[in-house]
Image (cartoon, rainbow, N blue to C red; front, side):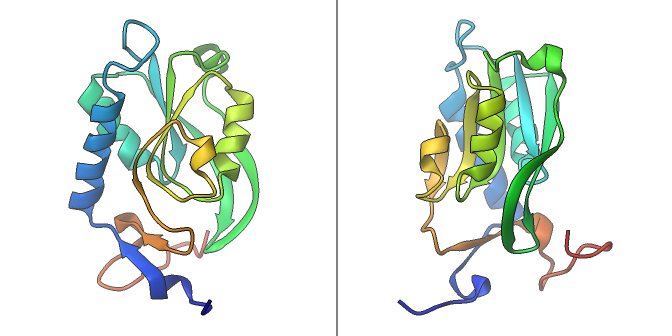
Length: 167
């Protein structure tokens, strides 16, 4: 196998595509919640899950939205996953009726950490890689493990580092 840099096997996702794919995720989740098909809340895994969670919550009419901040990357390098900010504990309980949304499951370490915290939550991602698929309940598109996904919030006409650096 030839070693490639992340950009050499890239999957470029536009704002239009993430919107379409997030709506497709919502359609798959519609009527699947434990309360007569309804979900109690959507929790976005920040930062990548925020745009998909916003779209899913809009499509499904879910007004209660919170976030969990998990850091598992330093630029393009995976690191040990750690929770920086947890959602409201009273809202979450064991996760029953909670829809946790992220843009991508890669290795599955982020979702594994969050699943330990909320074992009865439903985990949904827009994109899934093979190593992480066991940690996700619902996803839209599978991509190969060696594909790097370029999301629109990371891109301009060329890659643009965030104002405050790589993190």
